[in-house]
Image (tube, rainbow, N blue to C red):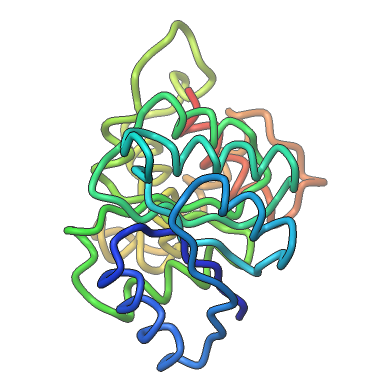
Length: 213
């Protein structure tokens, strides 16, 4: 997998690069500004970009703003935001663009290398990988939304889907059968108005609908 790293902390950037190379992936470039991020994606078209929210010169929201612009220019470009912060406005805009291939993890909550690599692979494959804390901060209500029709259990299932969990993982987490989870997932699709023709992408569409409410 060809990875672009967008991170201004040199030690962290080098650490990520070493980790990824050790796992057998290719780091095609490491850049530290939003502008350089845009140019690198235009030039290299990476399989995935790992991006910090706060970059020079103001260290506010340059990284996630650049990620929104990258997705506008290159729809579907997989992006994993890896940051200490949740930037709510642009994070919501990034998710609302749709298409899958989006992740948002908090640096201090990634406890295992395997956890990070699994998230990276899920996002590169068009799925999602959302930190539960990010989810809780993004769920700000703005009027009626289709997700409001879900039962409390269905919302629990959808929240775990947003983390990138499989049906088996969700069943274990909620102490229910996998068949029960499958039924809840089917109900979620119906209530969110996702047609059968969407196939496997319905899961990603459901998650994006949940996160962009």
